[in-house]
Image 1 (tube, rainbow, N blue to C red):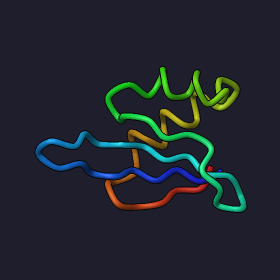
Image 2: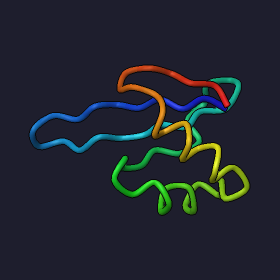
Image 3: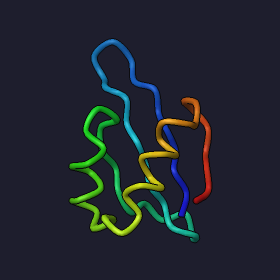
Image 4: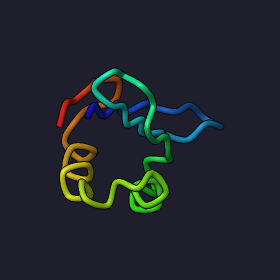
Length: 65
């Protein structure tokens, strides 16, 4: 699973993309509400790893978990 942190602009919020090993989009949600996005994407089993990765990686970078 891959996590990409996307920096928004003045009117567009920051977003998180979660992609599978084939790089298919699994979840896409606002960085300000990661718990809601994780729940909607049925990724509760990976919640701690996802939140840790979101907090550690810089914007514009991809991280594999």
